[in-house]
Length: 76
Image (cartoon, rainbow, N blue to C red):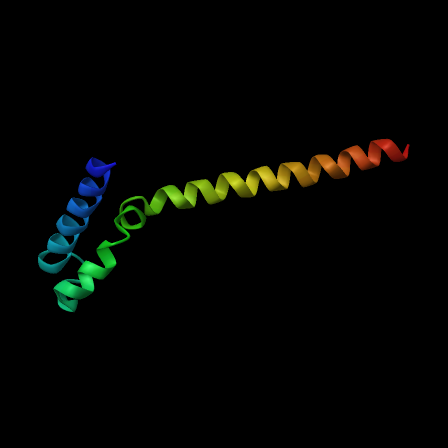
């Protein structure tokens, strides 16, 4: 567990330094980038969330559609 916390804190520092000098928000300053770096997985895996959202939407649409089909079949 200690190693995981140390890894997470290390990534926070790396993201803060990168954001301060070379990031899209370099004009904001170190502490602003440090606060933003607390959620580095969101920054790194931004596209992953879009994929997960799309998959969830397709699953919901499929379930609702199958429910309507099952209801229509049972009414016959």
